[in-house]
Length: 84
Image (cartoon, rainbow, N blue to C red; front, top):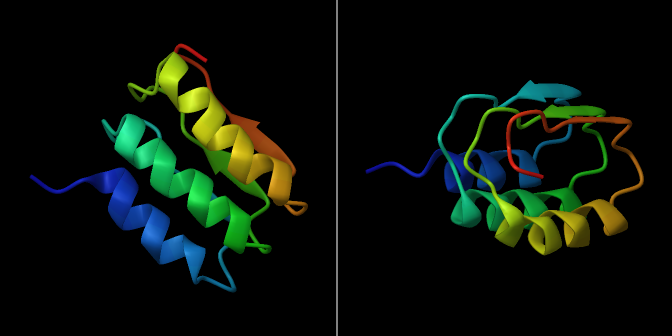
């Protein structure tokens, strides 16, 4: 089975032009959160990220926070219905 969070995380980690991405309703969880957190440490161009309606849960918080702490470009983060 394809892990959407892992795939998307690796794609936008190296991206230099994407400004907004909606990853809502993609079904990724802890593995996806790990990849997104890592991608956020590298990506400086993304301004808006929507990860609403995914199964992230409490275990994803430290994984995403690490990436968010190192990212100074993201302006908007949507996390509704993710248990965060």
